[in-house]
Image (cartoon, rainbow, N blue to C red; front, side, top):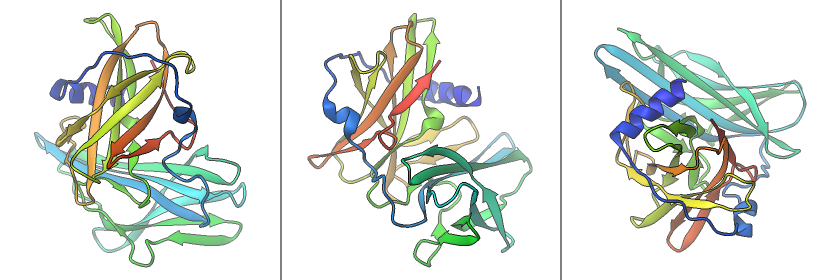
Length: 279
């Protein structure tokens, strides 16, 4: 429900819709992956997000993390070891999300802190901690630690990852005014050149047919009144989002994202699993 409220606020501020264009599904949509599925390191940060803001005295702070680990044993723990404002360090536990393949897993987690008169708890620096089979592995950004300030949006840690879907802001819901469903997708891309296109390829019938719509660049992004970021950010990451209308009978949509720039295509298909959103 919270995700839907944030998304509706965003749609009021930024509106975008395109018509469906169905055709046969290209084979590349089902097989391309923007991010390698094999990882020679035991643990690596995939991406991290920070945002903060204040509205009528209510202050909010948000951080979230995505980490990839090698599946070295069943019993394991993954966390973010984060510096606090007072100089101490604290663990933010992550939770198992899904298997990439039979060798690697994705773990995710978030920190949210808000209220009237609250202060910032976490500073900029953090590292990733992975404990398994009596061993501890670290991703500390090659000894320099990761550092992301208080209101940056996304940092894509993998230099080869140029596009990433933010599933916290995808949704499918019925709009009575149009008597249709609205499909909404939000994506972050690395700013590789001024001229680019970011689009969504989707299906409602298991890829028997497909639709395509483009996303719009968001110079400013509001995730509700308490969260505000601008793009491109310090790391050269831009936020793109958009919506299209589909038949109201569709209860599930499967989709992937393509980023076209400099004559190249970069895909995020969720490690070959594609993304799914339901009403």
